[in-house]
Amino acid sequence: MGVYDALAAERAGVTTVVAQAKLHGINRQHMFRIRSGKWQPSLTVAMRMAADLGTTVDALFERVDR
Image 1 (tube, rainbow, N blue to C red):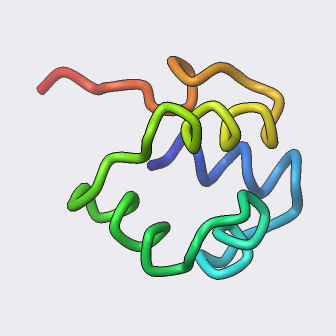
Image 2 (image 1 turned 90 degrees about the horizontal axis):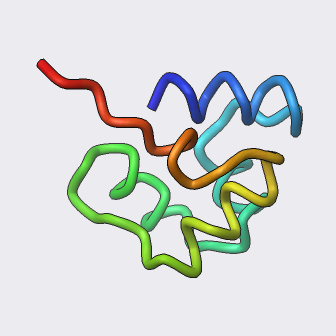
């Protein structure tokens, strides 16, 4: 989640997972699961996360082809 981490730090000043979860109004366990790839956020949560950071869902969850 490099793009997310950079935007969260730059635009919202949050650097911890707990602070990130609080920013988006979600449970910290959900944020840990999103970050680990064990859970994908609902569209509503993804849109809120993007709006909170002033970006798009596509940019926030950009996939890297390997």
